[in-house]
Length: 466
Image (cartoon, rainbow, N blue to C red; front, side, top):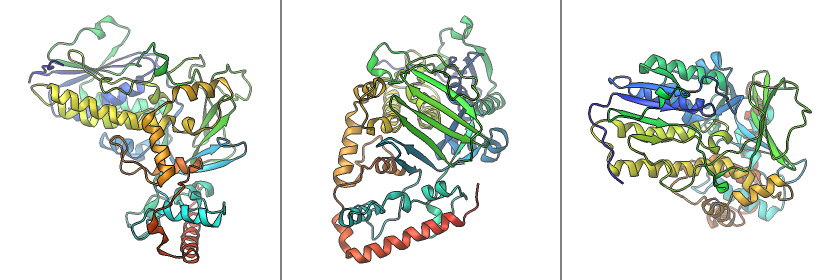
């Protein structure tokens, strides 16, 4: 790869997005404007004036909330201007068998005992007692609060059981996009262009770097998610919920997010909609489409000239937060590279490598429920089975079931609470426990875990109702 010369006279960052990637484009523009606010570098954003959003609402977790806070979009602003409500867990209905419901909380479940991970004690207890009442949900403050519709912010005191609570915020997608646009204009000398205007797509000069956020197009079916119809509806729910609900269907699944007095639903299916059970339609398009996924190869984000490709992918469309968690991590390693004289080959390779690793994690989290589902008798699930082949993900699941330990791939973060909780929600409990979990006899272990379970339940019940 030849070196990309960006001299010290860098004057402009130009962001390009299209009608399907405006949210990612404005997020990138806002982050760029803020990161470069004390420089002479200006930021422009070329996008469609008639963009569509694939989400009526977004679920933002800690990394995105912290990034937004740096931009001045605090939780208070999100509550007042984007209808933000708390989010604690995902509820899976009917994924293993009809009628079954399980919760996967954001935070790590249980507490380590004598340096041994909690799941090993629970595994030993389940294996020896053969009693289904010993399940992970009862040992997670997140899931217990979600089940009782109670909430409080976590405590900073590690001795408090409240320190085990983690939460995200669900926000109105359109309102968040407006807030990001406001930040970009405020901090970045932002020039708003129209991506349909040829002038907005002129070739970059040595004094300009282009960040291309448009949807990744691919003719290779292996790079497409097995989803060809998405429809967003909104209606008034019977009651509020602190969980996102993912209900498995014979030919797809439905995701529901609750935002104040609205429930936003997205249906993923390979069938056309018949119009039933649709109280109110949102602004989103109902036309069928497939989402391309960026390849897992390390050269996906290779620059070309002075253009750096930050593709929007199927993962962005599928993830609750529209891929903003991935984009946050990606941009964090990009800004230091745009600091001056030259974007070297070494720096480019580092950025591409980090982007690829982070993408693998977000992709795996996005497709994990479909990967774990045991359906394969309809078009949707046959497509899912054929297209979700992933050696890293397969190895991770099998290794965890064998040992109770999450293998430390480079692209998985150290804190993988939601990942482990999702595996256990799908009954992927380990077959064997750490030998150190046998430090107590079974009666002592039952007593200790029962006290912990009671403490978590009592705490959840006593917290304020939402």
